[in-house]
Image 1 (cartoon, rainbow, N blue to C red):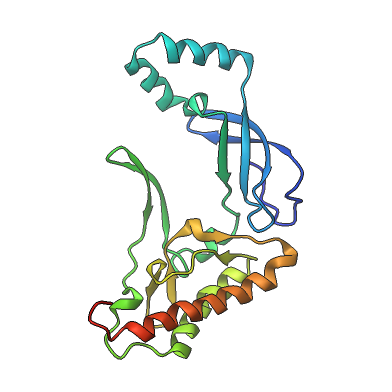
Image 2: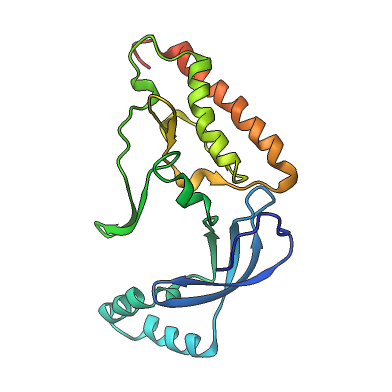
Length: 214
C-alpha cells in the first residue's frame, strides 16, 4: 500500500492495492473519518479470472483444497468489503522498545494470527504498592509516551490503565491498535483530550485503590 499521508483528504474515494499472503488485492474506498485517515473502508475489486476461479472452489471442490488455496492466496477469499488499518511509516521503528514493545513479527498460535512482541519488565498501574504514585508523578511518566507519539502526529485512542505498563521512568503502551492519527486541524484538541482523559482515569484509580474490591 502507498505511503501514509495524514494530510490526505479523507472524503475522496481512492483505489489501493495491498498484499495479503501471496495475494495482491485491489480495492476502492475511503478513510473512515478525519480522526482515523489510516483506517480505510474498502470494497474489494475482483478480476474476471478471480471470480471464475473462486466460485467453483467455494461450491464444488473439497474443503481441504479450498483450505490449501486460501492459505497461499488468502486475498481470493476475502469478503466484498473489508477494513484496512495502515501502519504509519517511521513511528513504529523509532518507538519500539521505548514507548511500545519491540515488534518481532507475526505468527500463528493455535490457529490464530498473533503479534510477537518483546516482554516489558514492569507492572500494571493497579499493581503498585500502596501508596501509589501521585497524580503528578504518574502523569509525568505517561507524558514521556505522549510526547513521543505526538512528535509523529499520533494520539492514543484507548486510554485505560490496562493498556499501560508502568516503568520507573515512563509507561509503555501495549495496545498498538489504539494508536491513531487525527487530521491536522484536530491534532491539538486530541493531544489535550488525551491528557484530560488520563487524569480522569487515574483519578478513578486513586479514589478506589484502597478498597478491598478494587
